[in-house]
Length: 113
Length: 113
Image (cartoon, rainbow over all chains, first blue to last red; front, side, top):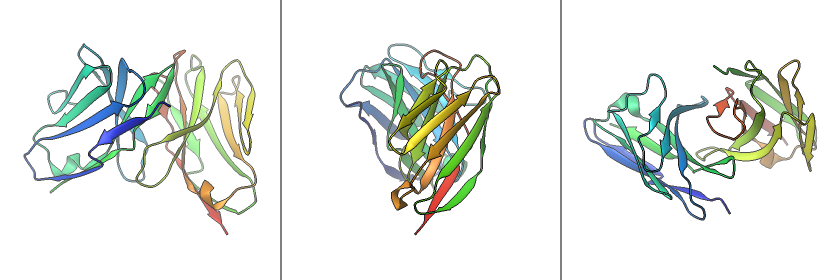
């Protein structure tokens, strides 16, 4: 149980375009999901906390207008990277909170050309 | 806020030997300490965790110890196997649940055959 999926697993987009990443809890409902960013050989950095039915809470230094988060249902949160630039290329990982534990998705590798 | 330091950054051990990874945290209010294993291109997977009311926890070849006074916690892997090769992250949270986890910088563990 407690499986989290992400889609897509890999995406390549052109600079200036937007890309949406989906995070789904497959066998449980999650009122809280988290979005992380991980650069190569570095740790996970929390970007924002996504709460179902309300606005996301962003960490200091994360642009909320650039990284749009929508948590419209108890099993789905989406992260949209708007006007992507090469520096946004990274590994994006979501997690979902279930019974006081975070379960992580497999990650989405975004490459902006 | 919480700061988690992790050492070493890389660790190479002979198959069958033990591996030890150490972490320190700064916020005395932290009371939940999970450890994650991340394989290349995948999301982190929880392998063991410990709460502040416990000094040691063991699960087969994996054990974690916690010294609240010194704000240290460690991961011990015995009888290492090739499949233990991965990046390991320690983490801490100052909340009673697994929300807003602060990750260490990671340890790349390599098991030599």
